[in-house]
Length: 69
Image 1: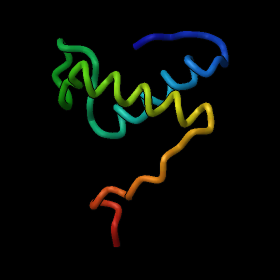
Image 2: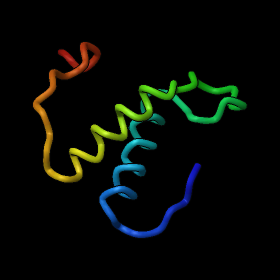
Image 3: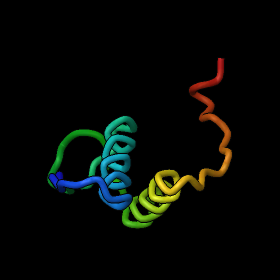
Image 4: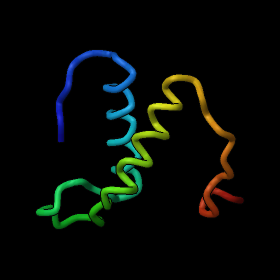
């Protein structure tokens, strides 16, 4: 993965994107044998969501079904 330095909104959003992908078992490297490869649109959509969260614009979303008790 990338190893950017700094604390700009873009870098923090990228770090959040990588954590989300890892927690969902997804990766960006086609050569990786673990998990599933994230497609272009899902990467861009998730990065956009992460950037909005970092900037304080978070839409209230329902928790995934797997989180429901």
